[in-house]
Length: 288
Image 1: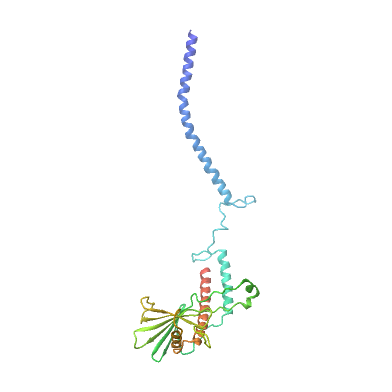
Image 2: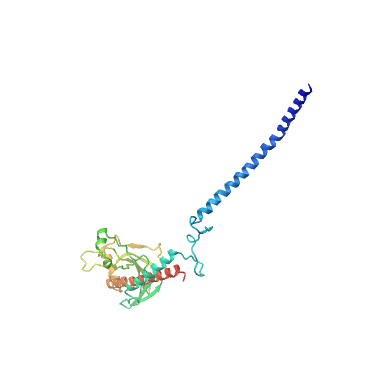
């Protein structure tokens, strides 16, 4: 009887001990396992990333943490700009390009206009001014976007060599402004070089190399074309009236000879500004 009672007490003690210790063990397990998993998850990818960033792991030397031979350009001067291998190749190309453009440059100084025209330059804009019989004639043009595109077929391109390339000619739009002393307005002609260079009328012995696009009266002293002033478009204009307008310009020195000389002047100015742009671009790339 006493043995049975002792066994019962011992069994009850073991059960109570398990019941008291089991919850604490289960509570600690979830707190410990994520910590170990988190540490392992951080360490392995970081080690793999460093190994991927280093080069030459199979060689004898010790791999470095970061390889700066590519992707991080070096700065060789105090300008604070980047100096990459691409910049070096770009600068060499520009140097060769400038030499070639200087070789083919026809006019080292701008050609003169016949007829007593004075020239005023403001960057890419040029003004030709002439006074005749109390009237002031001003011709303004800009060389930007003055080179017409050349469209050639593939067969023609294959037959032509580098020496037979078409000559680049600047054909800018230009504005002729005629001012009389007794008038508060100027008669303004918007002119251009047509692609086909054909005359406006029929039966002409010599076709005009330039054409009038629009005609308008503009107030004196106005730099911009006023849209509120009536503008005569010549697309649907009577040929007789158009011919009189062309004769009006010719009497004031704006004729085919003038238009041809203006193309030569504009071409020389455009080439001069192009070489200057290449020089500025080369200096910018080389940080000079």
